[in-house]
Image: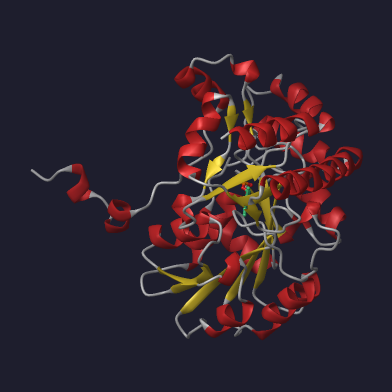
Length: 362
Ligand SMILES: *Cc1c(COP(=O)(O)O)cnc(C)c1O
């Protein structure tokens, strides 16, 4: 009799496991702490909480949760269309932007295809690639920054997708809009360029690829409500691209992939400009605070504009555990090949101060 493993699809057996930030309640239980005293600076969540408009809409929507959500995400796509000056048919909504990246892989990748991304790029690109039996082509990142010329040079006739996040997670580095535009223009017609803009709201200037998309280039852009809108727990993200790519992805996704309160929250949060503005301001101040503090402690970090910093901390893997003991959760980056590095999410002023204090005590 065959074991389950013998029956499984080949790629599943070697599929790496995504290591998420440790939840507050779990750390509190493991270390005998009061959950209320634990701070989580591990998953780049919004320290201000959810968008108030989004939260109110989700609460209201829960009363209707005996009904299926609108599988077509009609109103959110209409709102996004207005927001971006595109058509509703240019958007696929996902259970987080993670899902739309998986949909992209499921729709376009088969064994033998190559997918290009940076050696310290967001791990989901690799997971999506491997799961479909395609081949990851990881382009070295000197000083943990994308080498866009090397990424372009890594493209072969087998390349199907090229992923780029700016800012990149977990390194935090950002590529210049003009460089991203140039890369997008330089790619062969049959390569899909997926620009992951999970942290674009934190930038002063994000690249705009809509003109190239309209001109028929194979470009898709992903965004999320998880970071600047503070809705990570509800899971909503989206992809914008041509009507053709959108209609293909819609065939692959589950009929009700985005839940009812999440849809309502995202629709409302999209109008919450005041919240996003405050988020940006708190983050900018927090970044300055963290960078100054790390410098003072003599710790190296990667300059960035997102809502987190990658910092080189002595004995980072031990420090990760030590910090949990005192109720501070951060993220070790060993899994990204960055031994000796921790990723620190920007928190509120007092959370940042506490993190720096505990780092100093190590
Ligand atoms: C957080 C993050 C996302 C968003 O994930 P969701 O599934 O939308 O929560 C996407 N890309 C990168 C690089 C991220 O860091």
